[in-house]
Length: 234
Image (cartoon, rainbow, N blue to C red):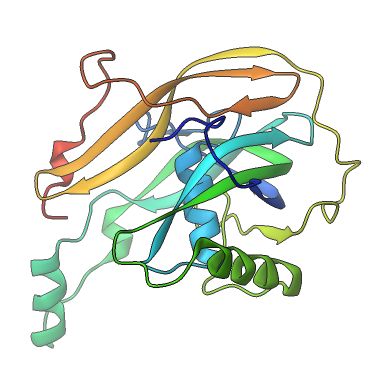
């Protein structure tokens, strides 16, 4: 992965905001607890919801926090189990089979963020099979952001927390990063999906004057964090 200072092109910039956000820490998935700022992985997914093609992928280089970090506790109903593909196939083919959500429901707490606003900076890295210059895809993203168009509804960490988006200057805040410094510790950088399951990549995160510079991920032996092998074949 290229560092944020080695790109030749000016980063693409998108502002996103919403009433609620939850960038779930992977090690705390039962009772959801959000990171205090977005993860690069979450912002990659948000941009892909606006515009995506297999000819490139996004590299998040910087995230600016434009609204004060405020927390809110949310209690909601969730199902306790994960429905497998075999169960889905059985439910589709056997008309007598039923899934009773009432017997599988549980109340869980979520520590989320409220009234959030961010300015995301990203680059596009072309795939080897790309048949057009990066400028073409960059312009397509800019046009979609300016028009408010998206492939699917962008969200802030979890799908029920929808995101608004627009070009720089469109968020309902003054546009200046908050004056806050914080050592955030080890943060999720990205998720790689392999035949062996999800593979997490991490980086040391630091908020300086409201700006999170996305550093290169740590090596596999540099940090002892969840591997999520249980998601193999999910």
